[in-house]
Image (cartoon, rainbow, N blue to C red):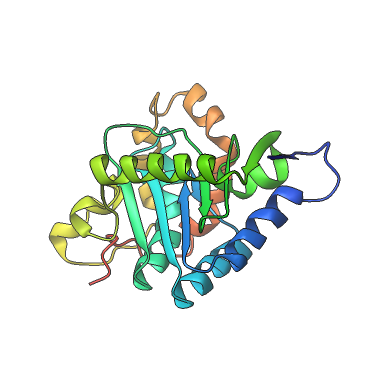
Length: 223
């Protein structure tokens, strides 16, 4: 087993480099479980390349996490993967805090790091890379149980995240504009309270530029 930390006190980006290496080395299977899915451009492109290579790429995320704006921000990344016939699975019983990465039958990574840049470059995180065949099979069995029993198809519009459902009945691809931001804030725990805005401030600042660009928000529907 290898222990790989990340954070401002760690020289280099070993966790990010390791995950990127895993993605490119995967031959036939790459399964990801993460409560928050916000890959940077390099990770997103690596995943798309893996799907095009014929790798069985699966992403398991909660249908509704505890961060409303993060759920919104992940939508475009998931839709891009869906368009390539990647399997996106929405965990429906509730919030899933587990983080796991499974690569073929050779390795698995479990720990505190989400599949996002904040965990890989900013937060203090640690992941354990497992090589034992028995332990790798254990991670595989857990992921299979999670998505077989409790996950909906994230590439089926009927199971798309709550923010996309608002516009399905109209049959139009509405854009997220500044006008809609008050609605988003009201959906956050605490509504428009100072505590809610403060706790989600960094996420809000990250979303605001995208909100001003009239980027389409559609159901996760690849048909």
